[in-house]
Image (cartoon, rainbow, N blue to C red; front, side, top):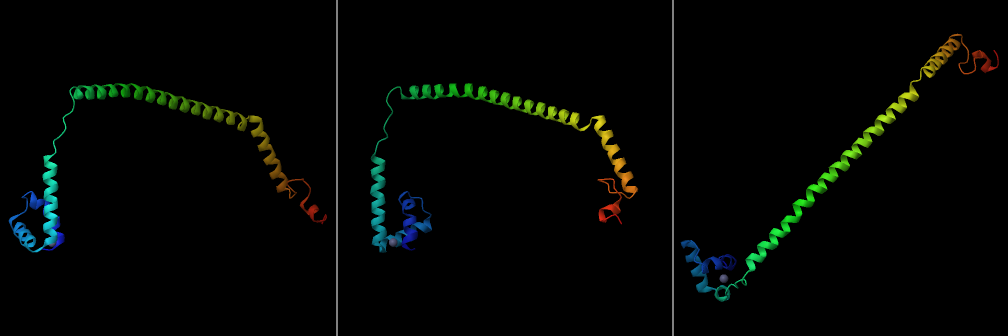
Length: 153
Ligand SMILES: [Zn+2]
């Protein structure tokens, strides 16, 4: 056994928790190693010092005051949270409704602008006229014969 292994097991040795084989190895190492002997003495005196310290008792009425403080702190939380959540849900629903109304309004406004019957028939008439001019081999933008753009030839 080396010092590193021995010092890792000193606490278990003091608490009598080592397996028989480890206990024998520890005793053999402690018999020859002053370093680990002094480590064992330091830990042993610390342990006896800690066990001699008494646990302080709380003053009378401490438990009752603690329980009242805990119960009072719990009363306020559940009241706030549902109200806040309800308001947040109401706000979200309002925003969603306004957004839906704005979208429907925009769609109906666009429909009114895109689909007037006169505009549709005007664009159809324009396309028919343009195609007739093109079929007659004229410039579709001016109506002049295409040859005119190249000097009238
Ligand atoms: Zn050692």
